[in-house]
Length: 367
Image (tube, rainbow, N blue to C red; front, side, top):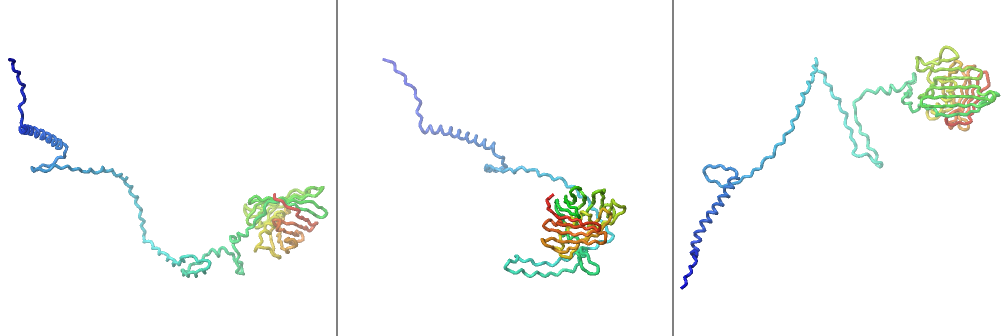
């Protein structure tokens, strides 16, 4: 008989109800441990709460922090103003009464059109004021007549303007002699130079005259005049304008003569006549009108030349005549052509002791 095999031990069967009773306590302990750990973490990170013995619910407060303040710039202290001196018057100054304002003038809302007549001007009353003395200072009264003449400022529009630079060619005749004459007129701003040369065959140059000076609102203002003739040394006339009393000096003699405004020499009078004829008073010349000027010669005398306008001849030429003041004086006749810049187209000079000198214009060209 074989021996019987031992049976393996088996775990005793557990009843489901027994398993439930043993597992639940374990799960409860585990769950309590987990909850306790979470509570500890939350307690460590939460904000402290006040404890007054009573249990309070756990709350979390989130507070927004204020923005940091930006420091304001500190203004530098202003310097104390300097003390203003106080002027003490012995007596209080008199108060100035303000001038009354002029009455207001009504301004139309819109300017009148061409089809509508302009509105009547608004009459305004103003307090009487003293008359302005300026008009009385600008008008010169003629003694005995009460008439007034415009002041120099009002006559600025009639200021004389000398002609531009030019070269004039003349045919010359004096008795049996005939030749040619040439006038060079050079204007440079406010100064001028003038030269007259006369030449005849065989003899060549028989005389040479020059004049130089300034140009102002009255025309030519000569400073020096020279004359040189055949077989005669040069003679000169000087016009002293800026040194002492205005006077005329001569190389031919001692002494002087008074220098009056508008005075000319024996050459510059031709250009001065052209300058004055180009600016007629009142817009045009009339027969009987006159032009006067002092004329100094190298011989040492000063004559008063008064040209009278005889009239207008054929071709539109103005005929001017100057009669002598004495037997030894010069008679002069001039024909002016406005188309030739008012230069004389014919000149006739008659001396008491000789044949007349005649100059007839052949042509002119810009210099």
